[in-house]
Amino acid sequence: MTQTLSPDHDQIYQTLANEILRFQIKPGDALSENQLGQRFSLSRTPVRSVLQRLQENGLVQIIPHKGSIVTRLDYDVVNQLIYERVAVETMVLRDFIRSCSPADVEKTQYALSQLKQISEVFFTDPSNFKVERFLNIDLRMHEIWFHATGKSYLWRKLSSVESSYTRFCTLDIIEGNNVRDVLADHEEMLRLIDERDVDGIEPLMTRHLYGGVRRLRGLIYTKYSDYFVPLGGNGL
Image 1: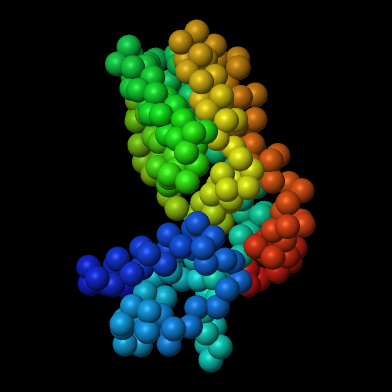
Image 2 (image 1 turned 90 degrees about the vertical axis):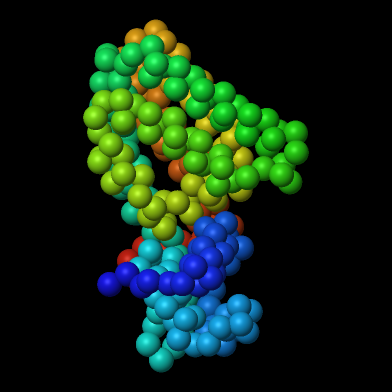
């Protein structure tokens, strides 16, 4: 059952979740109830409620009599989710191109303009670049064609937060330096829409959605090997 937290406790949950998603708290790190209680001036009961909610969302595993550990990323899960997104988004974008209205295209153009704006911040002032905003705008452009084709439920299911995939996308921005590639891919998506080019969709979606795997592949097994579940591991 999902824990109901007070507004203050909900804010603490969001703070810890964001720190985990941004790798300020790293996979495999321990979260001490005592330290969290001191940090946020909380007793053990609300701290445990926050940790339980983090566990429900796949960010933490609570080990009885041992403590709480930030979960590692599961590369196999990431690969399967990318495979799913390539298959589904290829079909949905194909349907969108065949049926979109001028207003739908205008919404897509606006989303691309916002992506360009936030990308410019990355190129000119990286210290003020907001990873979450970049990812949200990226997703918003994809969301447009799901809504336009009557696939809103499917979009909610596909875009729900999954801890391994969400952190993998963030790591791709931090280390893979993906902003330029992602922007170019979205510009190409708009070209396909403008030209009603359905044949180019699957190759583009495959390149776009597997981009993080391509950019991070060597680092997954070297620099960031501790962030990922070992083959046959249990997520810790």
